[in-house]
Image (cartoon, rainbow, N blue to C red; front, side):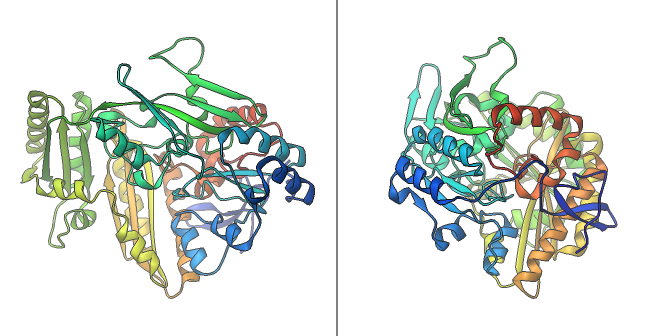
Length: 501
């Protein structure tokens, strides 16, 4: 593989390769000004004195286990016996109070620290690129407190999201946040990755649901950022750490809004004649101020999977409304009129109801990844209404040679545009060949998105998959991110190699 310089990417940070789409990344190889040191005996001794002798695990098994998340490329590397992102040791916290001491030792010895919870990232956020410490926070006891008057729940950042949601359900509440990884992710991870959920058209993303959180800085201070319920005292500092992927601090507790859970809900499935018709329907409902509980639009290829029916021959929309009965009914009636005006027809609620019952099911992707040579990938991006149609066509065309199936749906909608989720399914001769194919897929998808001026990520974050594109994606705003990083993490210890840092 040859490396060449490129004005479009940070060529000091990546190995790059040329394709028909331009200069593309392969892997992070170095970063100017970064000279991390390995975890030496003095640092190890200091960590064990602070946390106890069993808290520092430098065994091969622990290091291998923490060198992979659920990024399909990383999964296939693991199956091929490759562990390119290994720490020097895994350090387990029993309390978030211990974090500042670990950061102090790491800064003194210039050792990178990559925080890891449940490892459900699908883009490589919790994978170390410079060795050092993987800081495991998954074993910290999870606590929560519900405020039924102000309608919030405060939970430890280590809290499993699905477990928290189940506890709230027992009291008749919900956070409204329901990513597919709900039972595999933590509330702290939602903040770090700027997550959003399947019902975002009604409840919004995590940025709309969080009222405040506590974070430990790399320099050891603990700060609380919040608004009760809104504040105009300078910038909204809650935004600083949202989506920062552990590069600016460690989130330790989170306060989220909660909502009544048991409200009348209506579901419906629509067949639309074309992708263009479905996109126009989604745009029109947003312009009219609707807030449907469920809104997911599948192209024909994915509609066959979504309905579990290979005979489906049109794109399909799942819709749902929730609220007082008259509101839920009226909102669904508006959606039905909009669909009819675009040539849509009602298929009944069964399709949407069945999807609701299996919405946490990863089996299609996981089963294929489990096969020798099998590969699958999910890449979510976003664009404006004026750009999303062209982006959809370009991605489908460009990715078609790289997989057996290229599926697409649109599931998070705004007045200005929508997200798009592309799923690729295929088989290669070996796991090593599957790794190479997944790299091709990412290179191609990111190049197409950059050419079309699209957002490179809507809710999976950057991680290792997108870090080499961060500077071009953010443009001049990346300077602000670098300055914030320099101020909050002067030793540069926190999750280096992510977000172009």
